[in-house]
Image (cartoon, rainbow, N blue to C red; front, side):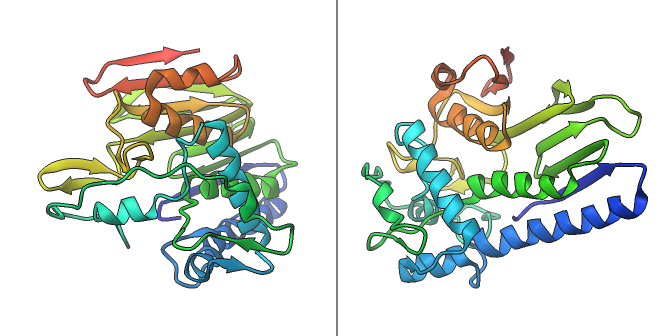
Length: 279
């Protein structure tokens, strides 16, 4: 998934715990093989090249369904069709290390009905020219799938690139505590059922034509978002809800919180370095 992963299980059965960790790690690797757009042999890459998956891998079809749900929930602001804008700004195989130079003027993504892409359980078909980036949804699903293998013990933690599911208790028998780091520690969440995700314009960032850009595309402009927030960390009922909410806050700003219910909590840091808590 292009980032580091940390798996923990708290148990009094060391052998069972080790077996669970191995299964969870293998499951994360399977998600990577299915959903990475950077692997030529992934199911997603094959779909992006051919436009058709028949029948689709189960992980791929699930991720596409969740991406469509996110697109509709966000009124089109969480759009999986961002590969072309990302490549326009120089992000292809990896995050650029230097200035990529001037880029072509961005173009807004045209709203589209995505439901027709899934033609039943046996076929996914994309319109001509459409390619999908399922990184955020895929990572969140992968975390959840991996956590299933660690269930049934006193505690578990799955951390992939700072997005975390933590259930039960830690090694001391206490509820888990997860620090919120926005360049420095700005808060924490504690509990026995945590799903936390962070989105930021400060990582996977580079320059294009002398301007700072990043990987979070605003489909209304086709360019990296220029919102008020530089960090958004969200605790939500599920990891995929946390991931989508954090990204939406970066793209839409504080107005995104109108879509959240009382179960969501967020820590936000704006471009001036000011931090606030939404609960």
